[in-house]
Length: 115
Image (cartoon, rainbow, N blue to C red; front, top):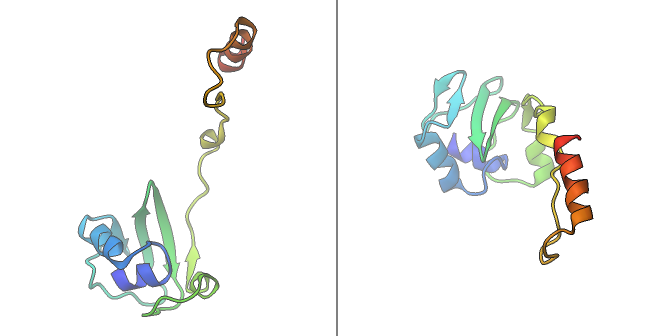
């Protein structure tokens, strides 16, 4: 399992993949997966990578790390799209721009609170 996660580029390193398996962040067919768990075509892998849970269907099993284009052919990503709330723009000022003027503050408040 850890070798496959690393080979298809879901994790940066193989130790990261093994740590995710040991930490309970990887499931194969809704069962917890150890680093030595074998995968076969048709298996569903749920892996928490970073702050997202990826749902992957295994198409082809590979043992060695390959290029990104080849790795993309080894699985089908069934992860649902993130909710639209995540794409809400956030009002930010440039670093070092100082305090906003009174006019800028009114514009920011209007943007934030919809007044």
